[in-house]
Length: 86
Length: 520
Image 1 (cartoon, one colour):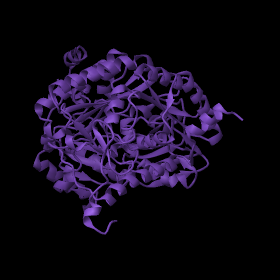
Image 2 (cartoon, each protein chain N blue to C red):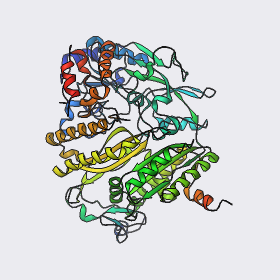
Image 3 (cartoon, rainbow over the protein chains, first blue to last red):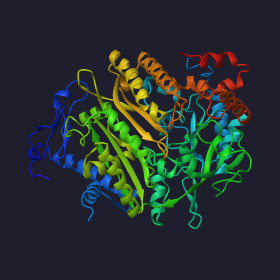
Image 4 (cartoon, one colour):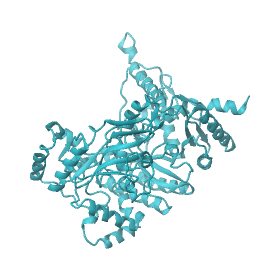
């Protein structure tokens, strides 16, 4: 968390990710603010909270994998084995 | 049309007072809930509805029984005093099964969430029906076991609701669905009598040819035939390994052909495949972090999932990847494959918003219409359903087409749970918009029937709109339903107003049924 309030409430400069989405922090996508001007207004989120939500989502998905199986086999491993069966 | 055969009669204040007085003789005070909060929180399910009519669905009281005997005592009192009873488990159903239409008593089973017996030798567990599958599996994992009933509401739905719905499981192609996984259960009938049903004598028997197969009769009735209180479930080894590859295609037809090929491959660890159509991919590309960065030529997707021992999963997985190569599928990568599959178990937690036709974000609730459709008819039903929702969208911004999935139901690929997800702006769902939606639901169900399908593979079909077509779908079987209801629930107290079952108490209804069966 930053020392200054302003620093903590200013996300990185947004980059356009698609016609309707932008990205701020790495892997964090947001709706283009121009599309949130009438019925739902964008809220100011502190950086730490944005990142907390993103990490919590990843933690949840990781937890769900282990809940259903002990290990996860990746597709890339299998493709490598098919292409090079040695 | 939907109100045919139903009444909106409510319970009088005098009757409510008498019911509460009698309940105090069988339950503790903390088990009888009468506050506004307790009642309003048990009035609805996640399926969007006109919220200005919330008051119409509020029960007069709720009870929290802790045993089969307490449930039986409550139901016996209700039957004697002719007061409606509505069973409520997780309240996650999408066809209003747990919604009280006539007030009365909501029987909330959440306190019956104990594990009564774990039989490691026979691989069964006997539980109170108020237990949630996720919490049960946390306990079973310590023994290396799993109860693999896996709905999209996995973290929040309960075993009893799965019985009342005869639910569908994401990984049912490998492990079967609720009907296959529940061996037997105790049920409190509408008269308050207690019945144990299963195959033959029930208990831990998985297959019997003795007598009528009553277990299926008491599953999927949406709480109209009784309240399941204790169930014995079939257990499997917790899988050693999971594989969940996602593949992309330029167009829907290629993804459809590939999905069929995966399901027909006969891989023993294959637990399911999901086809994402072009509307679904467009929706995800708009609002889902995993899909926003995908290139424009990703227009349709197929995912598959395998569970089992790691050596089995690897061999089966390689077979599926070889099929993928033959079909020109593009693997989307490990991160999206694993992340998206893990999110499938918990779709009720997804924050939702939709768009107006001008693109502005609006708050929307998720609704999902489902059907059971044979593989060869999935494309035609997909097109028909999108046309129906497009017509809604043209008329109002209340509805937003969020695309369609088709999930394998069986290990041979014979039929698919076909679903269309529709965003609904509930705050704007006035009576006119609701009428539009009810008609659309009826049209969606009619399209499934016209293509040889069933109105629902998973949710049930007792909500306004679709329910009108149940007599057509079941034919003479619907008359049998009416006879069974009348015999088991002589006073029509068990979840009244559902499935057009009020017809059971109205004498000769052949003309009304003929009208319903001839609906366009």
